Length: 181
Image (tube, rainbow, N blue to C red):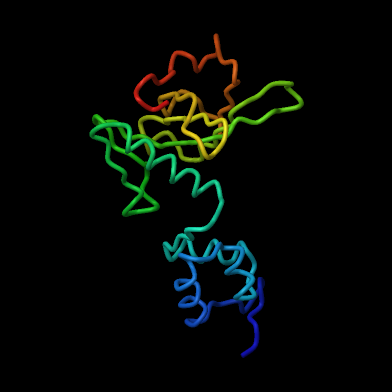
């Protein structure tokens, strides 16, 4: 059987490829499945997204974000995780009547600023949730060291950058002192 093209016209997916992807999603990463199927990484990721297939082994920001969501639910009493049943839910968690999108970032050094920052990506528009819960991690394997509960309409940029030494920053008033950190 010929290997399908990776991109361009006539790159439709065959049923056997979809079944193979479904069978491998629990044990392989998207990169491994792409190699097995002879597809590009982006083609596998987008097809998996459309079919709502998630890959358990991916060391991606998406997996890190999901782990952060699950962590928040485990420490916030009465919170409900919406993305467990519906990956494409408009927000991640309901808690005390608040619609919350959880965002996680690992501390990085930015040479141009000569400082350590957390860089959170908030692609959703402010209407999809009431708050962003920003979790600042020193590394992915530990619990967060800082958290901010920021109203979704407070910051209009796609990126929210918060310095490690955030005393006096505009985000300090949103520091979240619950049992998160």
